[in-house]
Image 1 (cartoon, rainbow, N blue to C red):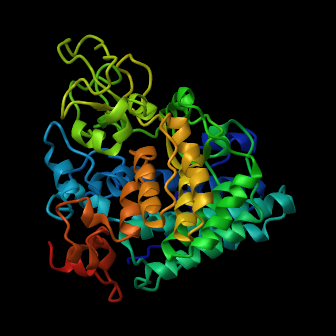
Image 2 (cartoon, helix red, strand yellow):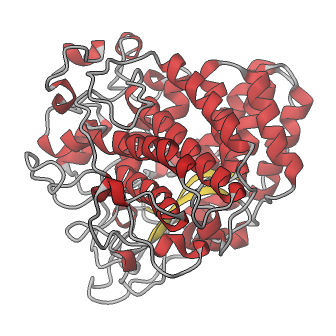
Image 3 (spheres, rainbow, N blue to C red):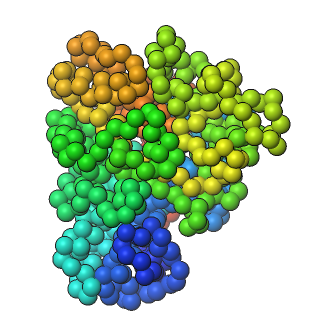
Length: 508
């Protein structure tokens, strides 16, 4: 990995005069030197906010401005491609070659996909957090001990989140815990990374509040105790430490901070990010310059007129796959999530007019059903990034606990949480207390519930089962690392300790 010293002046956010609840509004409006950047509490607040700003960029993706060698314009929303595209559930109705290459796991052959192999922004997040953890303890001006502890816990949580996210994408990755490291770092095992994540998240949880000031999207767009516990539980699942994962998730349940939203309230959850079901989300705001000026954000690729000015669909789930994923809907139409997550549009109406939406969500046939889990107003204006990206929400965490409990053979406890999600969806309770069948049922419920929320590929890779659902990957391929992304060439510059994932050494 080429570890560059990222100057604080390039990363810190100049503090505006608002209270800390307005931290999302802080902008990088000037450049300062590092010795000027750690004077008071406002500097500390801005440094932590900068870390989150970089993390939001990391999930959105590198652009031509970041990597001039690519012809890729704008941020594509790489979190989708990392977490959903290769699951076997998606198609590209307009036969886009880049999308197809990604779905088929041809991740090196097209230059437009190269930014998805680059972990640079995740390590900028990590370096920023390392600086906070080194410098903020020395600040005494306008910073109480209590707030200092919260900010340090925030940085520790975000450092753990960046390592966790990168490990799910690339597998073995470097661990960096120093702010000015210039030594060439090699990759460490994914188990070592997840062990670090557990330790960091557990430490952070002790000093993080259950909620921050401001609206839900302001509060839950940075570290909270619930987010840290969720991160800890996810890392334990990767380590196969199911009891510890279940215990961490039980603390979230026992807090009574979070609630399942009704299906009728899904628009507040998925469109606005304002729901008591949100545990941790990344909220993009076009007013803050967080947009893709060329193609638009990934969420607009799911949509067409009447939500955006697009005349066709770039990404979709085909009808046959929807019916496979939601068998209760095929049987009796009982799964409310189908109508909440999918829509059919009258394509006979001119693209210059607002197209009507059919009452039957699956009317459009095999390839032209719109994935509309994330949508805005029906006025063709939704072409920016202005949207929440759910990272952890309560429904998904209940299902994660159900999986952990099923693997521990705590079947009655598993059924309680599984059936909470099924009841909300309006489908019959699952009652079979057979461990292997119940594990499969929980995994399928996570597939149904979290579709398009960037979890499916990670679930399958964690379990070594991506090859079962993506026909372009064999069991041997997956055993050799095909489930993870290749490491970008940039990571090898001046770094003799860097290695490529075994599978990608032979599949260029």
